[in-house]
Image (cartoon, rainbow, N blue to C red; front, side, top):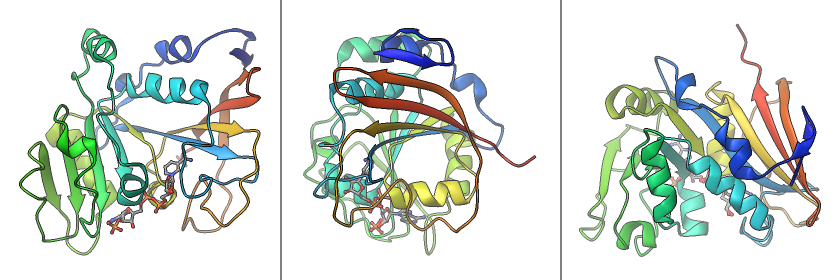
Length: 248
Ligand SMILES: NC(=O)c1ccc[n+]([C@@H]2O[C@H](COP(=O)([O-])OP(=O)(O)OC[C@H]3O[C@@H](n4cnc5c(N)ncnc54)[C@H](OP(=O)(O)O)[C@@H]3O)[C@@H](O)[C@H]2O)c1
């Protein structure tokens, strides 16, 4: 992998991410929030309903490196239903690295769901390891098999600003990685709750009517600053890191 901007050099996802100090950027009222997406050239976040076919092993390496730098990982229920997550940091050596960095052994896994209609047979819920917090508007309960799950209730729908404040103040979350999907991402950006976007641009076309980077975001220009641009010559992927220009 090569760094094209700001200062050209050979690099790796781990080296790039090693210089980030995301937890130090925590705000008083919420964690520092970064998001990660893989997109096709036609802007799709899915190929036949899944994100997996978009990126290569280099994209996975970037995602895993980002997971190693945050206190919590957040996804929406649609992503959980499509991707059936397991433990987010599966490699014991990477969990040890997290601890050396002063991070909890496993990131807190946060799932946002209106319905609590989740794939309870997914390894995240059945295989143990890691803590899961579900923010939901539903009054039903997880099945008894989901032993590592805690639930916070929000009437009507999940108030994402209130959820992030809860994570910051009650759970000590300083930096959070949102891995989507597009519906959750659109709401976070709409509410001004995203600080940086990490986007893999894959040289592929998806066609179809899959969602893009955001769903439901109101029309309007929102400025982004390109913080780095990397490429992977083997696959033709571009890895961009954008900072959000928050209004002052
Ligand atoms: N390319 C990529 O990098 C990438 C990344 C992530 C996902 N994806 C793909 O995106 C697709 C899923 O898209 P999506 O937009 O449906 O995913 P999503 O944003 O993960 O999930 C949407 C669901 O999240 C819940 N939700 C979101 N905001 C909420 C709120 N404020 N209050 C209560 N519930 C809320 C709702 O769950 P309920 O339905 O339970 O009410 C909603 O239906 C999948 O195909 C996945 O593979 C791609």
